[in-house]
Length: 78
Image (spheres, rainbow, N blue to C red):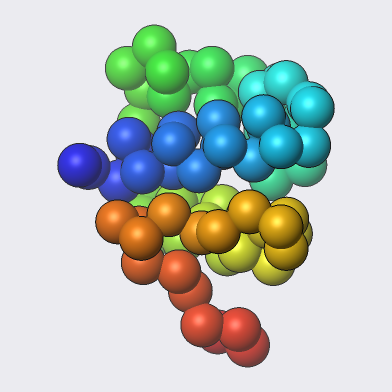
């Protein structure tokens, strides 16, 4: 699974749990409502933005939902 697939998986699970849509989450993470939709449609993301997005998701991840085992979770404070 590549980094974009991992990011989209995390975002889908987050949106499902929080009852929000991709444009809302995309705005929260990237300050742009179109970024996640662009990734779904074959767009790319830099490693820096991927790491920032996964870090944001890790910090805001719902406590009642386990983090997916197949995606490395960032360490707090990094």
